[in-house]
Length: 114
Length: 114
Image 1 (cartoon, each protein chain N blue to C red):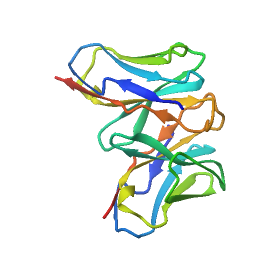
Image 2 (cartoon, chains in turn cyan, red):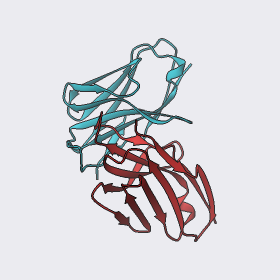
Image 3 (cartoon, one colour):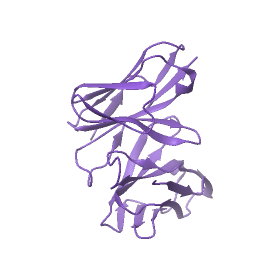
Image 4 (cartoon, rainbow over the protein chains, first blue to last red):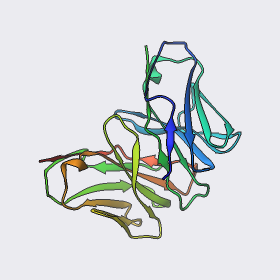
């Protein structure tokens, strides 16, 4: 079974802190994604990576950056956390290619910024 | 711009009923459509993936259909059980623009009463 894990289930941070959310997958997938999920807005893509050190912006990249130094690990970084970044963050991975492969999701990290 | 809509937003049924969840999308140029299940506070579990060339996929009591030309998909759940209570999300992977991401509907929250 594909396994996508996220470093924390729940996280509470203060405004202005630098926050790291970690995601690890064990299936040697090239593609990895970070989404955020908010009531009434659904899931929105923040960033995705299609290879080590490669990244592309999604729909809402402002206030976020990412790092992919190893194939299995994709980190989401909030440089200076703000209250409007309070959300559920979901990581996903998939094999490369555009037509065939499904995305597998991690359990999510519920981030609260106070 | 691709938009994905799910109707109804919420559904409550007695145990044992067969039910249909609906998903519609505005741009038929898609690679595939994926149905997910999300339990409260948890990540997404992939249920079924339908390629654009396919008409339906089945897994156990679940059957998903795809009519790409009309921009519709349905998820049929046979003999519903209380354990089926969750939010069901559909998502499309489109051919144009940023093809790496999934575009999600808002979800249908299902409650199956014993």
